[in-house]
Amino acid sequence: MKHALVVGGTGMLADVTLWLNKKGYYVSVMGRRKDRYHKLMEQVHDPKRISSILVDYHNTDELRKRLMESIKEHGPYELVVAWVHSSAPEALPTLLQLQAEKGLKQTFDLYHVKSSTSYIKREKPDLPSSCSYHEVFLGFKLFGHHSRWLTHQEISDGVKDAIHHNRKETIVGQLEPWEKRPH
Image (cartoon, rainbow, N blue to C red; front, side, top):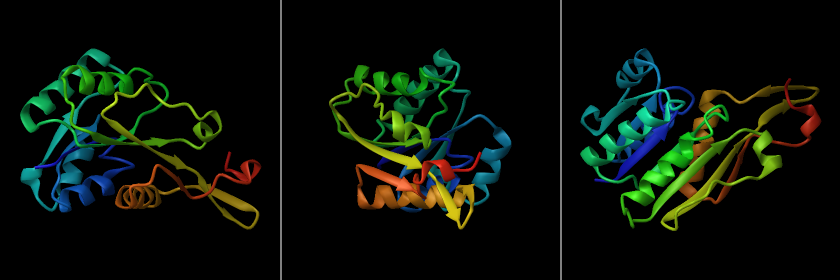
């Protein structure tokens, strides 16, 4: 069975978690809050193909331990969807290092969900050779003279579309004109 990891999969990316579960993936969903995980489980298509990794990814040692347990129990990740805040700069490298360390030669797709400001910086993590890297940039919606940030549903729909079409780069919403973004 294909194994997917969704970082942020109980909040902003909850609909991505549900979609992957319906598509037949075994989904390991990472989040910090049990209440959100339980709410997500009320909507899951096949509860036998989902498990939680309840961890604060700011705690690198605990993150590494929980990811190792997930891989040992369900096999290597074939698909990773990762929304990681900049306040945890070691979280994504820890995941990528673990994939490389474990000798998991199998190619996996990483859909790296990023903020609008990261579109300007254009930085990519150090990637193992087995990683097929995809970037999903989150923009905003502009309505005349008003703008707003994307909803969780719009974000999830954009990520699902990027995965479905196997796009290397996706912009959800818009990033221009930059000066019109919400503040």
